[in-house]
Image 1: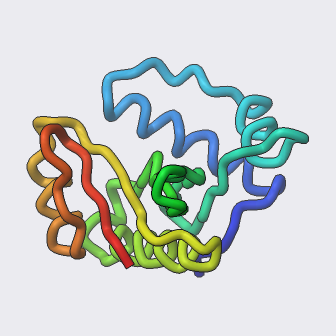
Image 2: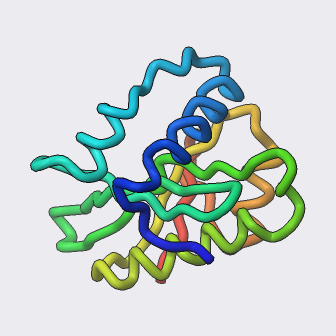
Length: 140
């Protein structure tokens, strides 16, 4: 079951955030306190949807001059043991549902420019590439 993370999920979420950082070759420096601040603190601005073996981190964005709200998918993580099971697709679908509930008209994200597999995954889900660069967007 995919649901919005609560403070009780921080100890489960942090290792996944660190695993994604390592996957990208980044140092895993995020702390539990950082997550608590950004997800649940007085000035929280991230929403995390979490499930066993995966999560997605989302934050609001806007195209103010058009009067359009959107949601940026900052992270999508699926544990290696669960890849290929449909969990990634389910997390993206949950992100779309969350975005729509917020009055957003699109979900956007970025991938590493050389990550052809990720780009193919998102394109198969209906995301359109935003050229130039590794950005994609799904309008609804």
